Every structure is written in C-alpha cells, then in structure tokens.
Length: 78
Image (tube, rainbow, N blue to C red; front, side, top):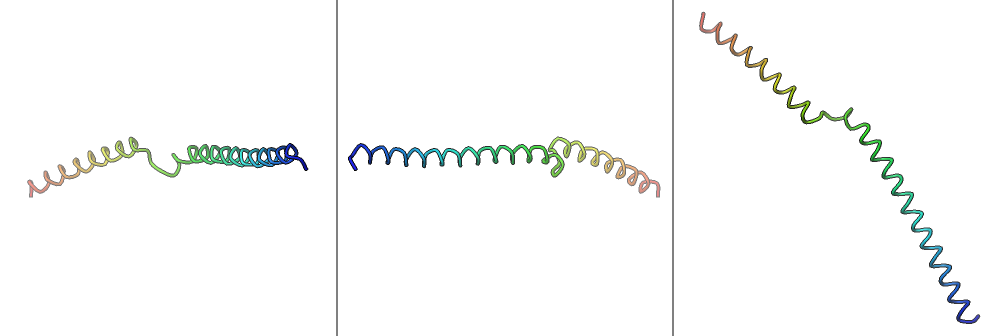
C-alpha cells in the first residue's frame, strides 16, 4: 500500500468515528430535550408554585388571626 491509500483509510476511519460521535451526541441532545419537556409539563403537578404557596399561607394566617381574636374576645368575657 502506498502512503496515499493509508492516508485515505485513516481519513475514512476518522470521518466514520467523527460521524458516529456526532450521531450519538445528537441523539443524546434530542433525548434531553424530550426529558426536559416532559419535566416542564409534569412539574406543576408535582410541586406547588411559590406564589401559590405564599397566597395560601397568607390566607391561613388571616384565618388564624381571626380565630385568635375570637378566642381573645371570649377570654375577656369570662
């Protein structure tokens, strides 16, 4: 074999390996995008949003304040 044939074979092998690597990376990227999309879709069902949590806690605090005020009013009477 002459040096040109060896060079062509080396380039073909390197190109094949590079193409295989690029395909593997592309498939991994597509799978990550799919997983991220699924996570974004399911996230609101698994966790409470921060602003929803703050609103609910504020409402609970208002209700508790009203209960404590009623209890204080009853304690003052008795």
